[in-house]
Structure formats: structure tokens, C-alpha cells
Length: 201
Image (cartoon, rainbow, N blue to C red; front, side, top):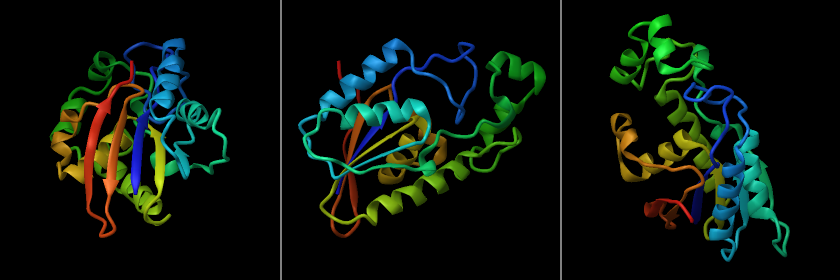
């Protein structure tokens, strides 16, 4: 199986620099153009499935992938690939968060696997649901070509799983907006990253 991992384009949050996580945030005009370039980058690749997060910014990217193709391709919206739930951090900037909940960010960084003091998800919570979603994709069958449009943290979760990186090293995985990564699985289930975080220009 070939799995293309595509992050959505640049967004336009209500407040710049604030946490938004798995909430609905619109793409900016730049983000829409980025998504079109990502779709164009793999336009010559045959796809058997397009899968996306149900959030609108990811769905826009899926629509671009499907547009203009001569054959119908199944599109599945799967909540396994939503962005991480930031709980009561949503709408706050890091500086505001430090005033409201001193030490919360530091506590999260010290224990990313288990800390969920904001009422949302820990990184391990996200990892478990994303890898469960990945197993559903793998169950579609060998020899397929699949495009998954999602978000930074779900993309990191899959790449970290393939690369064998712990949660503490996820920040080392650079995933620009509307970038494309490619993972290939062989029949035994072994996987390798062919390229990572490529941003089409």
C-alpha cells in the first residue's frame, strides 16, 4: 500500500496564535491555494481511496484531490483523523494560558503521554485513535494507493509510528501546511517513509 499523508492548508483562526485543535477553523485564501498545489502534486498518481478528517479544512483538501479525476474514487470522512482536542485551551494564546493556568504548558510538555489537565486529549490519546484509524486503512487491502488529508498531529502520529519515534520527539517531525508525505507498506506490514513534509510550490 502507498499512503499519501497531506496536511490541510494554512488556516485563518479567529485570533492569531490561539489554540484551536480539533475545532472548526476556516482556511485562508493562501491555504486554499496551498491545498490546490498539494492536490496537483499527486494529480498523476492513481488513487483507490481518499480519506479525510471530517473538519472542513481537511475536506477542502480532499475535494481538490477528487476534482477533475476521470474515475470516481470513494471518499471516507473518518473522525479518527481529527486534530487533537485542546479542551479548555481553545481560543487562548500561550501567554493567556500561562496567566489563566500557570504551569499547564510545562506540565503538558513534561508528560505528553498522560497529561490532559485541559479536559482534552493527551498525545497518547491522539496516537491511539490515529493508529486505530491507520489499521482500518491497512485493512482495505494490499496494493492500494490511498490519500489521507488531515492535520499536523495525526500526520506526526503516523510518521512517528513508522519511524519508531517516541512522543517526546514528535516536535522534530516538521509538517508544513499542505505538505505531502508518502509512506509505503509491504505485504508483511513493514513500512517506510519515502518522503516527508514536502511542500509543493
